[in-house]
Structures are given as structure tokens and as C-alpha cells.
Length: 267
Length: 164
Image 1 (cartoon, rainbow over the protein chains, first blue to last red):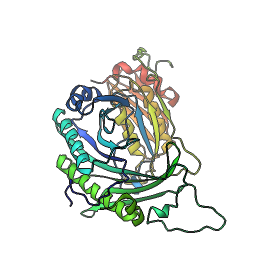
Image 2 (image 1 turned 120 degrees about the horizontal axis):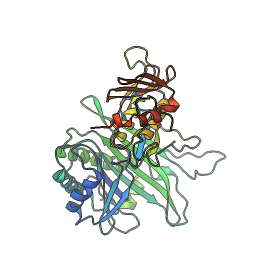
Image 3 (image 1 turned 30 degrees about the vertical axis):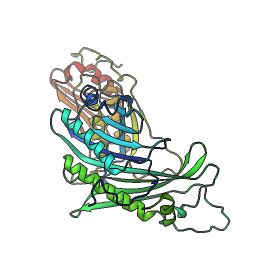
Image 4 (image 1 turned 120 degrees about the vertical axis):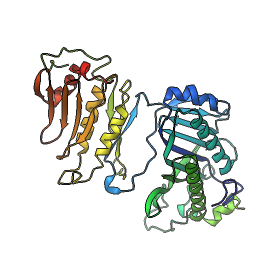
């Protein structure tokens, strides 16, 4: 596997606008009040701003179709129903913490910030997770992990959204008699990954038609890998997200067109 | 709130009770043609609910993943409606301080919520075949009630259902 600090595919101007690494937690996890009392002081220097949000559903996958629940509940307002957002001064980096989840996100938003590359994202996540483990009152395990990259590819203001086949090689261009060019197009693919003959992760390719302010049309390619690390400790988590990064970056290279690679300045 | 289910038990409403303050369950917003492979996710707003409440919701959700024949015989899949009814009932009785109930599937596709403590056996069954509340009180005999009185019955017995 490629080193976390070495590029797999490198672009001068990669379209990536958000990278997120997260873990589902179990064991001696921190409730919202202990998160503020114990965890926040450990990360406050880099993430001084606090906001509260409702919690997110757990990170997990069900690999057996017949055993997928028909009904699920998302609880707001209970004792554990709090998600803390700790953001950096420039608002580009974000830690999200709830009683059963921790994640780190780098996001470009509307800034001109350059993507700091995966090695930096991994280091920031590792620092935050080590801080969490350092203040937890016992063993904490991570049975599930997730890594995702969001790549918005937008047209200049006023230009129409191009056919998706000019961006994604998995779509074949076709003229439809009696219909103009589609206004919206999407693509969603889900892959099941196996380890020693048993499923352990899912990989998602999602392409959505998006609109960016002020009136720019385009697509967002969202690539996600979610699954069980080989071991629920820090080493297992980092190995999982390293693997996820490699799969995501190579998939992005493979599904996007050479013409776009040229636009982004492939090295 | 309904009458006490046993003449030997005084009505002692729990604090912040019936229902848990501002508690409600919202059905997922769906649009025509919106089909996904995942479960229907219901939003539950329950400030002040017992600490076990979130885990109880996960248990109920897990029951809806059981396949036909989950008991080794001919048990049916758990019906989504009964899962939602059980969750709604718990939203009303997850008073701060009350002990966590056991949540079990029923072979007819229903869900049963049970407490066994304080000299009480309380079973609340959400099902097609035998819905209702069954209470066996070592101090007051046996009582059966309709589901419409389930929450008030639990509130009545709250002093004996408190968690440790």
C-alpha cells in the first residue's frame, strides 16, 4: 500500500472540497458532558469554536440483505443526544463528537484553500483520536470506520451542466430522439468488499447534479468506504482509512475522463 | 391518565411523566418515487428520556431485521407497525428513573415490552393475536388491560419499576 504521505494520483488543482474520516465508538466512550470537560480542552488549541447539533445515525453496514431492519429510529434530545462540533479558527477543519462517533473533516467550503493532501488529514484525525483515547476512562473500540471524499465539479456561472459522460467514464453518451440534454443526471453504485471470504466493507460511488452559489451548475462525485477495520484499535482504524483512501483515489482516477484530468493538472 | 390498575397501588405520577416532555415520533419524509434500500428512519424527539431509551429503540429496530422463521419454526417477520407502536409507547413511559424493560419479538409478528421487578410482571404486547397489557402483581393478583391504558398503567406502577 502507498504511504499515507505519498501521492497515488496527484493533480495540481484537485477538485476535492471535503475529506472526512470517522469512527463508530463503543466501550468507555465519552458522554456529551465529559466530551466538553475532558476532550475539548485537549483539542481546544486547534479547534477553539464550539457548536451543538443533533446526533448522526451510527456508522454501520448490514451485509445480509434479508437482515436489514425495516424500521430505524434516530433519537433527538435524550441524554446522549448531542453532537459537538469543534471547528478551527479558519473553519476549514472540523471535529464532530457524539457519544458513539468521532470524525475529522477538512472542508474547503467557499474559500480558495488548497487541499492539504491526505497525509495531513490522516495526521489530524490520528491526533484527535489519540486525544480522545487519552481522556477516555477505559478501553474504547472502533467497530466501524468511514472515509469519504466529496469532489464538486462546477461549470462557470451561466454555463449549462455538461453531459455526465464528459466527466464520468462509466456513463456512455447517447442522443435521445425527442428529448433535449438532461437537466439532472445521477449515478449510484455500491460495491461489497470481502476479507477472507467474508464481507467487511462497502464502497460507494455517488454522482449527483449540484448547484453552487451564486448560480453555478455541475456535479459532485462522492466516494465513500465504510466498514469494519481488521482490529478495532487505533492501528486497525488507520489501516482501514489508508486502504479506503487508496481505493477512493484510484477509483476517482479510473471513473473520471482523461480530459478532466488534464484540466485538473495531472502530474 | 386512567385509573389505577390495582387497588393496592397508589397513583404516584413520576416527575416529568406522561409523556416524556415534548416527546414525539415523526414518520420519515417520503416523496413519490423515493425508494431506498435502507430502513425507514423515524425521528424521535424525546428530551429527558431515560438513559436506556436510545438502546431500546435500537433493539426494536433490530427486531425488524428478523427473517421469517426466526424462532426456528414458523414465526413471522416483525411488523413495522408494531415496532413503531412499541417505540411510541416507550416514548411515553421512558420516565427518568424507570428501569429498562426487556423487549422481545412475538411469533405472530408483534413486539412485547416487559418489566419483571418490584414483585411485578408486566407484559405489554403489540400484536395481531393477543394485544394488550398483562400485569401479575404478587401483592394484588392479575390484571389485563387494553393497550390504550398501557402508559397510564406503567405510570401507576412507577414507584415499583424504578431502576437501581
